[in-house]
Amino acid sequence: MLTRKELKKQAKTLGISDYCFYNGKLYYDENKYKKAYKYLKKAVKYQHNKSDNLDYTYLLANVASKLGKANKAKKLYLEVIELDGDMFGPVAIDAFRDLAYIYYQEKDYLQAILHLGVFFVNSEHVEDEEYELYNKIHTEHISLDMPTIEVSKDEIKF
Image (cartoon, rainbow, N blue to C red; front, side, top):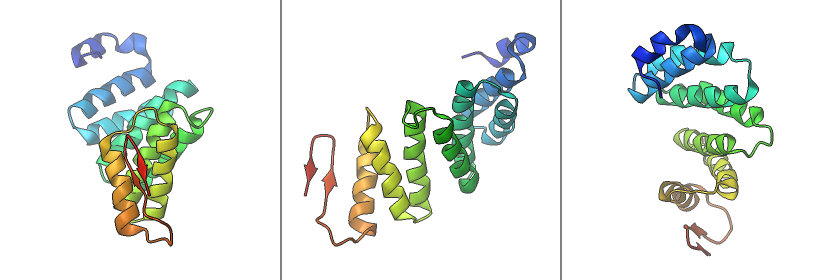
């Protein structure tokens, strides 16, 4: 990753979209989300390469989420899923997971568990945190006339 000093030196050769993306990424890494959001919006706006736009839009969605802009973040995550050609590429899969967390915070537990389910089925790496969220939603918030299911890395218990 470029430093801010290196970025200034390369500003003319990078192009506006890449320059804005790298600036936004630097601010994101420094937890300066308002500045990151400003730069990343420009990066997405001026990006013409669809595959790069996927990563740029995903990072912008993360920043929107960090800023508490849930509706904007949801819209951007859905855009990421749509931009991903097969809908189940690694960035889109992460967008499903991140949408699940937003839906959970909004107490839309059905959407949360559905998006988390898509993430589980398609992800090669699931953290304990995601299993815990699934189990919490299933046991505390969704009361279906179905057997209780506990999901972990190693097994599924009914």
